[in-house]
Length: 357
Image 1 (cartoon, helix red, strand yellow):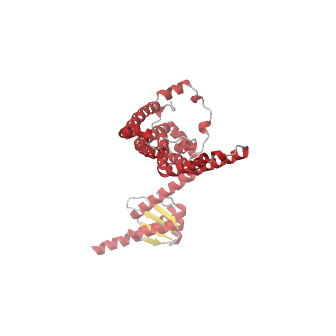
Image 2 (cartoon, rainbow, N blue to C red):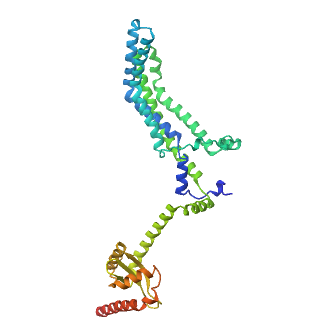
Image 3 (tube, rainbow, N blue to C red):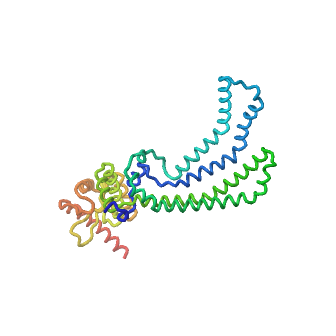
């Protein structure tokens, strides 16, 4: 069947990829998001740990120092809660904003921003036992299990490597001043988070490439799907216009490549140019290139570079442009006029060759 994964052997078209993006189906690794959040938290802790602690500690000290002077009526308690709330918000507002930016960046580095309700649409496959079993026993589930085991072992190793050398100092924390304990624990936390970020870097990179490969495999198409998509696209006027444009560009390139092999260029002399090719044994000359205005100028320019004779004949140039297509023989009614020009050109070539001998 065309829907079977075994039949989907062809790389997805750009339309298929665009449709997947519109539906919110993108290559995404949750490990990349986790890396950005933990890396952002580490940066925030190293930069704002002092200001956060000071911003929260100062109003709390004032509260404790003036506890006996506090009023317990509703208005006073409301004012106190507002003061403490503003103090906490001022201390953690910027760090929380930076953390939110890190979370958004974790998505944006993987794909463009997508707004789609497709994932919210009820689907039978989400509650189907067969589909659920396939998800549990599929490649994605196996990869997630292996990734989870690796992260657990790696995290234990990182914590051991960072905390084990500090075990004796940790035992003596009970005798430390609270402010000194805060500085030591902050430094240890930064070391631990830095090591975790380094470990997660490898996990995030490997997981992203795995998720991208899985997503790309899901987008693959069967030959029948490609044919059906092509038929649908052919009916789109924008697609047709694009196809015509591409065809014209290819025809122009092919024409210019044929000009150096032409026998003569007939012009009017500015607006029209027709390149004709003729060899002995041919029944009639063939038009290999033609054009008006800029294309005509380009044909004459290429002809001059390759020493192709250029003959001015206003009436014949206009008539040939209107009656003959590319790679076609000239009409019978123009045989005589064209024969005179080609005979004249061949005579010039023969005379030039004789003078060189």
